[in-house]
Image (cartoon, rainbow, N blue to C red; front, side, top):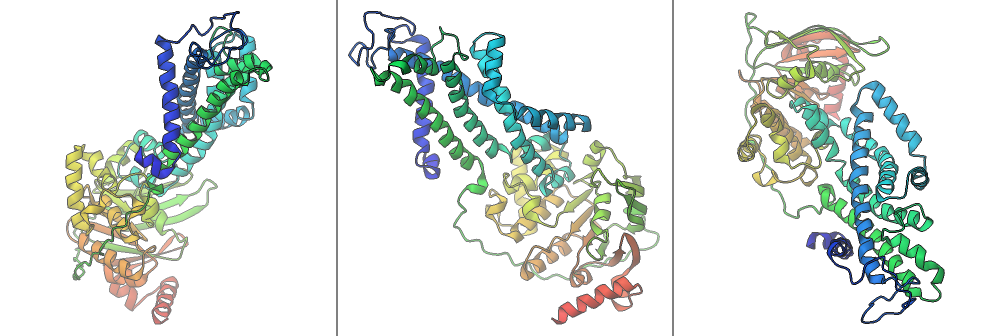
Length: 555
C-alpha cells in the first residue's frame, strides 16, 4: 500500500474502491436488506430512511439492495473481460510473432480486420441473435478488447524478440517457450497490466451501456446499468436514484484506470527510483597478456571452412571464409563496418537471421555444427561457445535482476537450485570484479562497465571453451575499456579458453590477441600473427586500417 501511495497518491483510494466493490459483490451472495427485484408499489420514489438508507426507485425496489447485487455483474464482467482479453491478446500476438508463416499472416489479417469492428455493435448483434445474458456480454467484450489489446502486445513482443537480450538468452541455451514467457511476455507485462486495467473499466462502462439500451444482462439480473436505465426517466423527481448507480460506475471505472497505471509502475523496475548509494569503481590489477604458442600438430578447437552466407535474393555476403582457432588462442577480427565480421561470428554461434543461408562447414571440437537444430544448438551455446554482445544495456533483460541473468546458461545446462544459483552468482561476480551488492539490481541501476562485467560473467558462467566478444568496449569510456580488456585478457588466452575478439580499435586488437584476421567486403583478405600484420601488412585494406588507426592515435 505504501509503495502504491509513493507512485500515485490516489492509488490506495482506487484500490479501496475496487476492494469495496468486490466485498459488496461477495456480501450480496449471502445477504441484502431486501430481495433486489422485490417491488413494493406502496413505496415509490421514497427518500432515504432507516428502512431504506438510499431510498426506493420508481418500482419500489430498494436502491441499496440493487447496488449490492449489481456489484456482482460489475465484478464478473470486469474480471472475466480482463483475464479473457489478456489471454486472447497473448495468444494472437504470439501467433503473429512466432507462429508458422501462414499463421502469422492470417493472424495479422484477422486482428487488423476485427479491431475496426465496434465492440458494442458486436455485443448487440450477439444479444439480438441469442439472448441477453452475462455470458454473451462478457464474450463480446473479451473479443472486442482482446483483439484491440493484441495489436499493442504484438508490437511489444516483436520488439522484445528482436532485442539483444533475447538473442543472448537464446545463446545461453534457453528454450523458445521459456524465452517467450520470461524474456518477451514479462517485459510486456507493464503494458499488459495498464491495458488490462483500462479494459476492466471500459468493460464495466460498456456493460452498463448495453444494459441501459436493453442489450445487456436480462431484466431479472440486477445491474448498475439496468438501475441507471430504470431511474433516469425520473431523475428530476428523485435525483438520488440515478446518482447512486452513476457514481458507483464512475468511481469503479476511474479506480481501475488509476490502479492500472500505478501497478504498471510497480511492475516495471525501470520506472523505480534509482538507489542513491554510490558505487566505488573496481580497479583490476595489471597483468601481462598471455600469448600461448600453438603448434601445427595441435588439433584446432574451431575450424571454419569455405563459409559462405547468402541473403534471400541470392547475394553473397560472405565468400568462402576459412580459418581455424586453437584451444587457448586469441583471434582478432578486424575490418570496415559492414565487411562481415559480425556475420562470421553469428554463423559460428548459430545466430544468423532466418533470411540468411550459410554454406560451407564449421567444425567445433571435431563435430560439424553448421545447420544444427535449435535443440542441438541450445545445448552447444553457453556450455561450449559463449557470446558477449556489443551493448550490454540491450543485451540484458531490463526486467530481471543481474544475478538471474548471470546464471541463466548455468541453470539451463545444470538445473541448479535457487540457492546454488545465488552462490554461483557470487563467485562469478568476484571473478569479473563486480560488487556483490549489485547482483540484486536491475541493468538500468548500474553503470555501463558494470553491465558489461555482468554480461561477461553470464557468458562465462557455464565455463565455455570459446568466447566470442563482439565490439564489447565500443559503448564504454576509455578507462572502462581498459578494465574490460584486462578482464578479457585474464579470463581467456589460457589452455582452458579461446577468444574471438571483434573490434574497430586496432590498438585493442594489438594488445589483446595473438592472431589477426582481416575481412573486407565479405572476403578474408589477410591472416597472420599480430607482429606480421602490424609490422608488415600485405593487403591494401589492412594498410588502410592501420593508417587510419595511426592517424587517430596522433590526434
